[in-house]
Image (cartoon, rainbow over all chains, first blue to last red):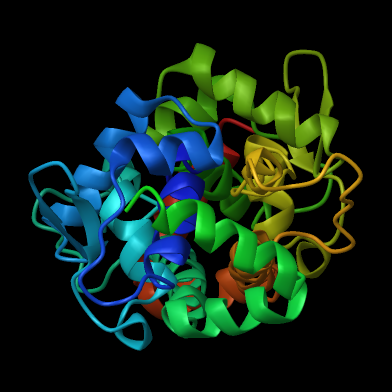
Length: 161
Length: 161
């Protein structure tokens, strides 16, 4: 079970958008070039972010994307779900109902105990992603990435915004 | 991102095997019939459990599968990983290395902060699955499934074991 590569791309793009000054946008072309990604496929991930209300776009020569909310209000979960959808990773097909010993009128009152455990694990995964926002990520990047490289990167990006 | 249906099948089969008396085996045919599953596909899931050392098989007319360990020593995670593999759900492709502002001699010292969060969530998912064993599941089933249905089911299964 693997997440799509677009999850990684969307998270990296949002990390950059979180660092943009007000009123500036980054185009799909610039985001693709900065990350070395195919523009057409990245475009689909960005549309997913837009449909989820995480980014907003503008047209025109300096058009592109910017965050639609404060970085503190966008979680990893928001971004992951914008690309992968919100449905649980475990689908219960209720195979317990195929038990040949079940009487015709037997009715389950609770979800299957196996599904309950699998859904609890899914909830733990989502909860971890919900707790980390784009501002938390910006703080980690500020610690990890040398200031000089951050400066150079945003100078490069802003020249194209 | 969805888990394979075989994860559900493997968990249900292990739940039954955990209730078998010592020295008894259930065949792929019986397990498939009880759960209303296609025998050929179920067979692959059972082979995965066998390769992971969770079940062991015997040949012959009353052959089939039984647990290779005590039910308390088999976790949901063991079973999920036997079917899905152990690799993390988020693969970091290190797209940060494509940054056009990086100097040729720049060397990352830590994993990407984005991957760290995604891996933390993966670990939370696995930890939840690691904490629940087949004996815990048997206890839940004992609470949920009426005693009469459990008896009838095991009578049906033991007649075919």
